[in-house]
Image 1 (tube, rainbow, N blue to C red):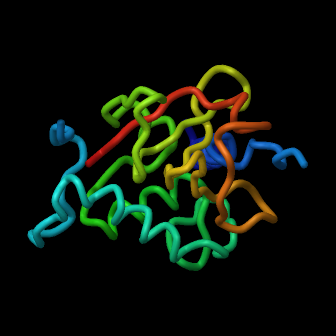
Image 2 (image 1 turned 30 degrees about the horizontal axis):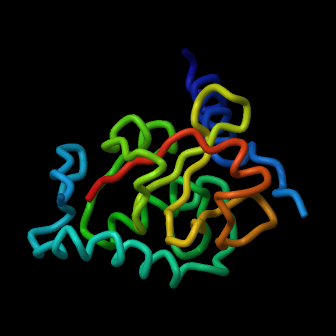
Amino acid sequence: MRPRTASLAAVALLVAACGSLPPRPAAVPAAVPDATPVSDAPLPAHSDMGAALVRIAVTLIGTRYQFGGADEVGFDCSGLVLYVHEHAGLRIPRTAAAQQRAARPVPLTELAPGDLVFFSSHGQAVDHVGIYAGFGRFIHAPHAGVAVSYAELTSGYYARHLVSAGRYW
């Protein structure tokens, strides 16, 4: 594959990853091997990790959406999740689909703050991810023109497109 063709293919995959969602209508878990510590600093206790992830995500509410973004300049959905996990001391995959494949599945009836919620806008591959915040809400970077914000899992677009949940802590 020529470099230009490869670059175009990579851009197409990223566009499908988080930018394809339309605007939204009016027992301690075991360690996950794919979530490797970013540093030698001690991680929070398992019971505190979910809360730590939500606290980090809350500080990012209002940050602009940026396709391919994974820092405080701007985020796409999986970039937000990556950034939050790295700042909590965990290394995870970059894309929403890869994050879903690598996470330990969590039944939707057992969601806890800090869990990831995965969506499919076309009924096939996962193309959106957010961080469950509790009380039926999650934090995500929705799409171009909409900053990092809360959304509801229980009604509307996201309720219809929610496919699974997972955990890295």
